[in-house]
Length: 152
Image (cartoon, rainbow, N blue to C red; front, side, top):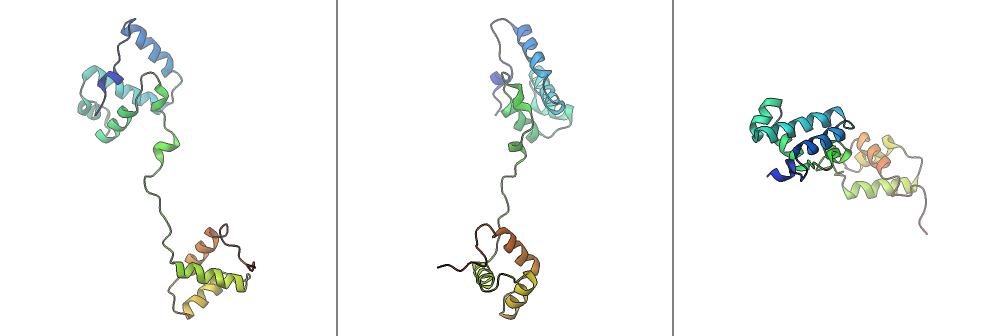
């Protein structure tokens, strides 16, 4: 839940000093961060998250995400950054180990083999694999596999 003390702290000097401090920090914020700051100010004024969401036309999930990140002492927490855009789950390759080993052995035998020749060889041996998949495997595994070099 939202920590209301974090969003609306009281200072010893009074709220005018606090508002002045926030106003000075807000001048350096991006347009989207200033909009999020408006959300927080509206929430502090009316004390109703759902009303704030309806007023600004945002989803409650979005509001709560930014409300939990909000730090009145550091308004730059309302800025977008790479972390906020990163997906939770990244796709991983689902290539079969047999395909990887076969492609590695074929490239070790003849480093000049391309994706089409390797695909034909694999299909002749009963593997169901496309040339695009072979190409992706070759590109992604160049760093990990020393193609064309015999191991001693």
